[in-house]
Image 1 (cartoon, rainbow, N blue to C red):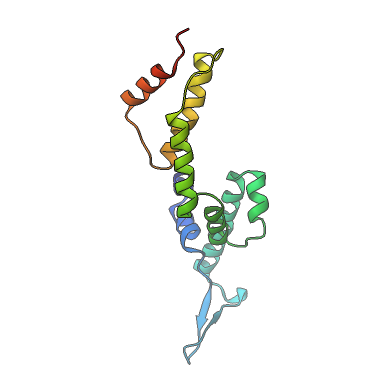
Image 2: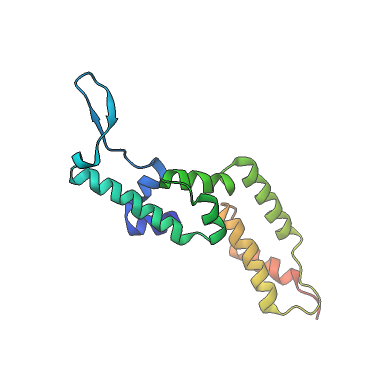
Amino acid sequence: MKNFVQSVDYNLWKIIINGPQIQTKTSAEGVVTPKAEAKWNDNDKKNVQLNFKAVNILNCVISFEEYRKVSRCKTTKYIWDKLQVTHEDTTKVKETRIDMLSKEYEIFTMKEGESIDEIFEKFSIIINSLDAMKITHFEQVLVRKVLRSQTKK
């Protein structure tokens, strides 16, 4: 998702990660308060518009189930944080997912009656998931694993 958002606009990615810049004003006493919308300059409006664009992009790229989890979030930072917590950003969840995928990789075998296309699809899902978790294998190792997993037939 990061590369997709950055390809649209790098500033959108910065807003997702860091949160939107809230338009503020500082009084003579040094008190910082939100700036009234009527007092926004062009840069303030651009920053607010970028947050709305980022929210829209995130809402478009997530599934309906994910959308239901984040639909009440008003900023991209809140959406991103909630998605990270519910998925893979927490260390324990990530480690558990890696363990499960590694086990699937280890015990991967062709079942009786499966075609080469079917086992390749299953294997690709496991490998792509491991790649997403930064666990990579050399192509030669993967080819040997698939060849060894085939039945005699």
